[in-house]
Image (cartoon, helix red, strand yellow):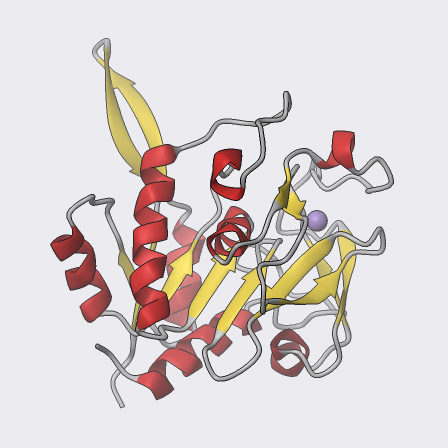
Length: 248
Ligand SMILES: [Mn+2]
């Protein structure tokens, strides 16, 4: 069986060269490495507002990876006024990812949302976000670790029987953490499948036979530990689900 193509969304960035600022895509290489290592074919998906182009991308894909990045989802998308601590929004990126997700959802493409990608998935599904954990959830512990993200900084308790629990074979994972926002109300039908000790939702999934998972941490960056010898198991889950579904 051929290896499934997994669309990987890049971040929107700028780079100055000889005094001129250009828009560039920015993507941590480890996302693509994790997909390839899990048996998929990573394909970076450049932004487009042309529905035909977006459809063409989805048509060749077996799965979708919504990556994290240096942005916050626009609160207007979930009906909230902007909080003073709201970070940079990237409307072009978000618009593209929402159009990609709409088609992926219709075609039941297995989809993994990582960090901000999980938050975007939740909003796309009708959920809401905490715009700033330190301000809005004072009981939350520090979720922006000031050290190497290959190292974990907090634990996540997994819902028994969840996709993550089954993929990892664990009931608790040690994860890295680099976010100031988090899922507030889950989109209707989504289920929380992992929480940090302070109660912050760290993972979610869609029950049923459409494989949709969100993780608030970066499994692709984590080094193996005794508590979690295979932090990239969720990538294997994505690729396996894509392989079983097939392209188109
Ligand atoms: Mn966290």
